[in-house]
Amino acid sequence: MNTRSVNQTSVTEFILLGVTDNKELDSFLFPVFLTIYFVNVAGNGAILRVVISDSRLHLPMYFFLGNLSCLDISFSTVTLPKMLENFLSTDKAISFLGCITQLHFFHFLGSTEAMLLAVMAFDRFVAICKPLHYSVIMNPRLCSLMAVAVWTTGFFHALMHSVMTSRLNFCASNHIHHFFCDVKPLLELACGNTELNQWLLNTVTGTIAMGPFFLTLLSYFYIIAYLFLKTRSCSMLQKALSTCASHFTVVFLFYAPVLFIYIRPASGSSLDQDRVIAIMYSVVTPALNPLIYTLRNKEVKGALNRMIRKKNCPLINLFNSLGV
Image (tube, rainbow, N blue to C red; front, top):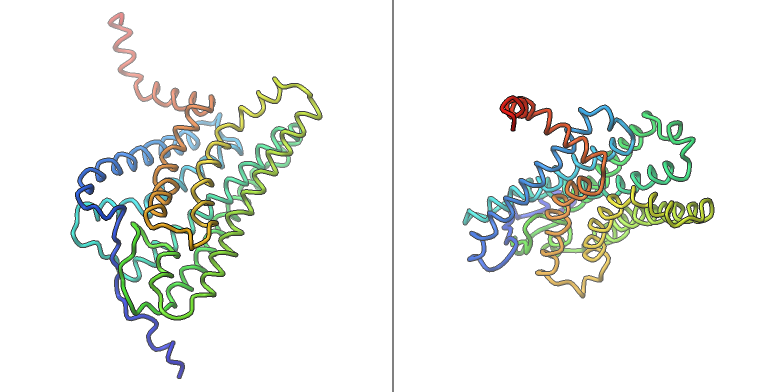
């Protein structure tokens, strides 16, 4: 009998060491991250609600924006509640199954968001470069198929990592120098050969991250080239790109920390740097996305204003009757 099939691990739980080694900061960081989480859920929840309820936003661009908001809420929910719990608790343990589950959903939602951003860039490319064929190309069926494709691909990509990581033998320390379970810190704790896991992380995850990134850049390159060749007008170029400003900002905020932490060589890694960068792309960026789309997108801003006015309608009528 193969001895590896008897017992793959002697570790039944891991200890998440958290955001910082300075425990005195926990009481300060708890309300900070709780506020960020509230902003994330409230902001993305509001966008998701107006995209569903406002018929003026029943367009491909906002269909994908609704998917992005759903992803951002879920992405932060994978890590933040456990982080907040650990700020207040002396027991920072997470079960082996809980750790693998967290790893799975983190990579599932993260890789899905990377691919969704590329789909959103393609949508902007068709809208600007093929305006007469936009409604035919970006029909509801194609939009639904693309959404299903990115969610399904993200799920199976994460399943690969969760299965391969769960099969590793963890026989040494169970202390994870991070605030959530990720592949890289778990590989550092594994005994035996982890070359295949490392190769999958660098090659497959690298492709999942870099592929959509280059497709996004390619879409913007064609948009700029098309506008210069067809219009030769800087004002038209500026007007067209202003419709892409929100998406481009979100892409930059998402990819800058992700590429830095996953593309750089392991020899240049710093535990403190890894944790700070992970906070940026898993906590801060999802909370900023609804603010970016609200401030930069007139349609979303208008829909939110209409929703607020509708909810406050009785109060406004009272003020009007009083002559206020």
